[in-house]
Length: 271
Image (cartoon, rainbow, N blue to C red; front, side, top):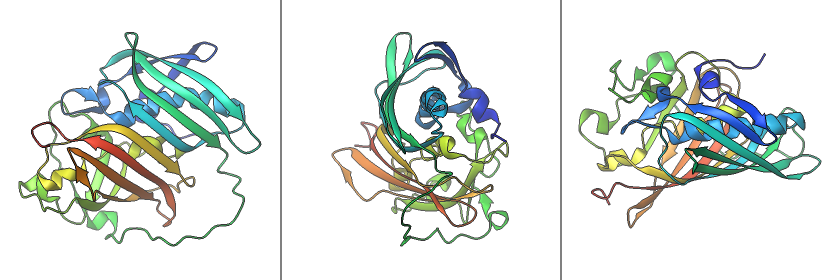
């Protein structure tokens, strides 16, 4: 049974012609400034490409590289897709998200069928060590953030409140926490590519006010088991106002299901 929830409703696309889909960028996934979250915008973009890949029997994004070209806005949009190559185990395509004729996101993605794993497996990493979700705290303390609707879609549980949230940035740009969709929808491989960009930038522990994603690469490693997702995120290099952010997602069985790295830009006053 396919996963269904608010994410599916708000990333839905409709085929208009060969390779062209209509979409709507919802205001239910907005970040500070009243614009759609980049991960959500990527979710809409990939949803269209997934339609074509599903027809090839390749339902799972394996690797995604997305460039965020312009600030998005809510409303009617269009996704244009193209299949570049079809192989025995994978296929690669491109998708472009446009609104009012302007390109917002350009993504290249390779899809596969992760339900038929083949080849050697060796895992040298490990999931974050966290108390059970029920023993952790709501990162927002139950508070809403006017205009920031993304926080109502994603639930975060931490062992302790992040320093930036209580006005005392720790100086350590790293974090571990539990994450899930607030409506109870379990994650799948398509949504993982959005969830790696659904959290507050970890550089806020350095006193930054936020950051803007320029490029995001996601490796989807497995289909996630139902339940909470354990996450690890960190930044090690802030150079000339740019920083990387590395993100890992582990499922409820302790299986690595997604890795991501993005390059992001600090606000001018923070750079």
